[in-house]
Image (cartoon, rainbow, N blue to C red; front, side):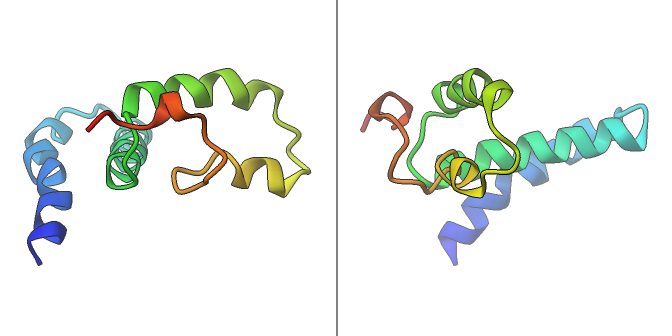
Length: 87
């Protein structure tokens, strides 16, 4: 239960910030960004390093290759060690 509560804490704190999302599209983009970052944290990744890795790889990704996308997911064992959070 504590782990669940800790994982939603940023959403609760961010609730007031989302009041200032000017459009539904902006609010959706913020929610997606929060979700990616929190999922990365829960999977033991450094969010900055993980996002940097994604931004390098995604432009060259073959959209028809589902396996290539699977390798970029936060729980993938094929992510480089640089994406892992230091303990």
